[in-house]
Image (cartoon, rainbow, N blue to C red; front, side):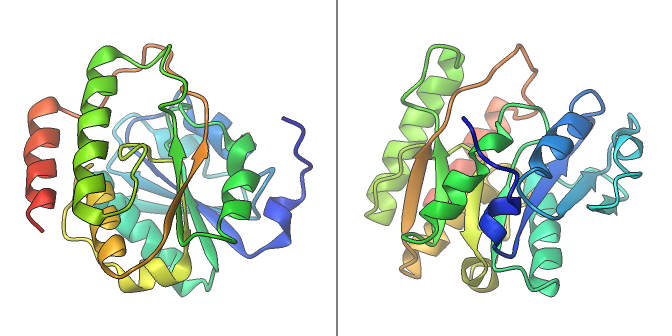
Amino acid sequence: MNNSKDKSLNVPACVVIPFFNESGSIRNVVEKTLKHVNSVIAVNDGSTDGSEKTIEDIPEVILVNHKENFGKGMALKTGFGKAINLNYNYVITIDADGQHDPEYIPYFINALNNFDIVIGNRLNDLSSMPFQRRLSNKITSFLLSRKTDQEIKDSQCGFRAYRIEVLKNVQTNFHGFEAESEIIVKAARKRFKIGFVNIPTIYAGEKSKMTPFAAISGFIKVLFL
């Protein structure tokens, strides 16, 4: 891709990056992200490996620290609240482990011309996605599609873009990974339009922080919202 460093097409956008013990990757992710936006809201969800110290010298980073590990959903909620207070129009979320390529940020911003939420779709490139993740993603995406009456192509992808109106009107209650599914359900209920951008699947043997039992039980609770 050959995107210019135009700070996300000169629109008031920021990127929220929740992280927990990502000292080996977060600085690289932040530096690549700042080619496309003017600021990153990095939410440290109680890291114990000094991850926050690797980015605290970057002026464009707004660093928020949780005293303990509350979960990705709570970290996102903190980041969204900060973005609302700072009057951004668009908010992008990216994971800190390097599985999302920030070079795709302009595509997400462009897609917000037609949608209220834009989610990365990795299911067109399944070659490197572990089988268990592939299967669970297909099942949860199918169930959420039925529940929301919108086609949900990749329910588990954390690379997303939101119009700020969505974040002002959709409040999450779950603190874990299931909060991302909760957002989809509640946004669809409020008639927000959900779209997708195809992105590559990037896995390099990272150990997932999502535990199967917690993920399944959380998702079931979301289905009954």
